[in-house]
Image 1 (cartoon, helix red, strand yellow):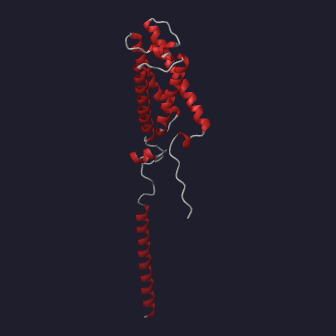
Image 2 (tube, one colour):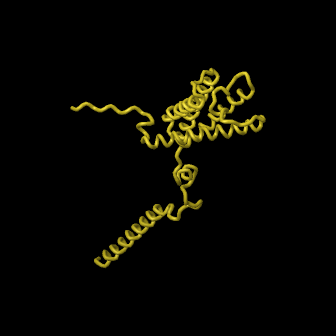
Image 3 (cartoon, helix red, strand yellow):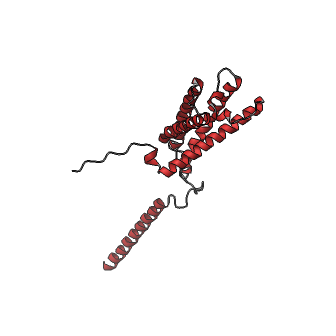
Length: 209
């Protein structure tokens, strides 16, 4: 017998075609930066600080000795919560969430390094990225599994479980009990015919005598 082929490992490559993977990654990264830009812009307007691209792509802006640095850390964590919604809408499958979540943060690392022309050396930045990736991964997996395990409702099943089937009225159908009455009528008709036959046979016997 020929040897059996091993099944390919589960992952994004086996579940989605390459072009679809690239499109989803592009949409997720775009949504990630759009959400971060909106949150950081709102924060700077409230705090009274001018908005700049350094607040998004410069890892040196995330510092632990300034108020704006801690506010940026909080904003990035809120952006991770918004990223869970994006993963739930675009990825759908729970087993694909870790791949896309880690890809988002890896591309953010590349964008930050290219923007600053250096690899981030801030421990707070690395800790924030790890926490953000973990939040998006576990939160996205939980959200997708919750939606996958929701019961599927079909038309008419809920009404039939709660009571009468859909489309039925509260009145009993007209033919309920008709079989028993029909059998009684049949028995009565058979009994009457038997009496009639006995009467005819008596009349014939009397004439014969």
